[in-house]
Length: 161
Image (cartoon, rainbow, N blue to C red):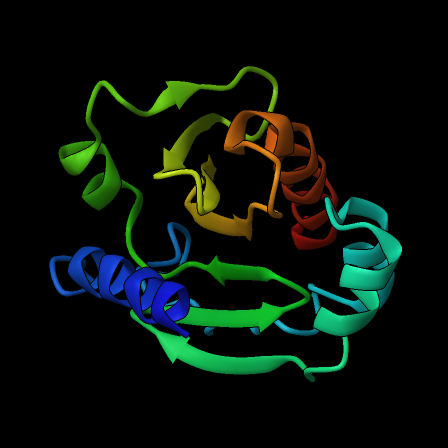
């Protein structure tokens, strides 16, 4: 619960500085994306860093979707994912050198280790923003979970096209 609250505080700090995302063609606000229909059981099963027993346990909690900023967040299976929570420029202004660039994911992607508790990835693809926080299982490191987070981002981006 503490991790979830911390994630939403982080997102809220970005979202509070964000302006509404605009559709480049029409100049009208983009309809908010829903996150949980993208973060399906099938996708979570493919990218989970958990062993079977731990995975079965975390999957007992149903997905929960919330509005966040100008988009939506879904928490499911040890993952919190946000779709369009803030404008791309907001993150670019606040990004620090601790965020590690990741090649070949969206237009821009950065990975961050949140004190060994979360493996976090920020992705910008066009005007879309995707953030993923994946819980790091006991005995693992955020770096060891990075391939799982990247695989999830690629799967979600394919669905957003």
